[in-house]
Image (cartoon, rainbow, N blue to C red):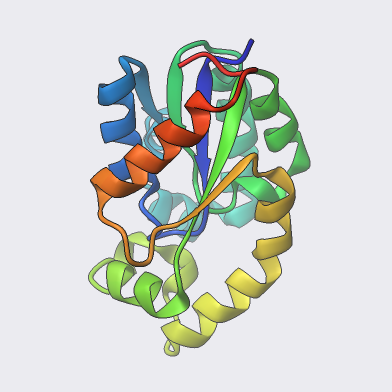
Length: 176
């Protein structure tokens, strides 16, 4: 029986904020993969991208996912690109229900607008276009990995959390 929850989705869809509240409500431990990657590397994600490149970041992401994926009673906030390597999803699916948080491109743009320096993939002139391109490419990967899908565009954190709990309670192969 699965006891962990992995939150996937594009940046700005609410994975961290929802994950913290969800973990608190369910009495589970909250884990943010990007923070673990930063700890392991001894630098920020922006620095990893700038100094070592995206491939080095993705390798660290695979390593950290492997370390966390087998844990029980966790709520895991995954980075937006976790789905780019199928091995990450395969590992997460062993112990976790995967919840895909979505949002419209305009909402994502608004939610990430003050964070250009922290979001290396959005360090471009036309951020709206970049978001649409990345979403178009990644959407099939998110869809394939997801057990549950929730659009956060018009919902507050509490509403998203309640929807997740409701959907998980209906899932007989999951233990809240």
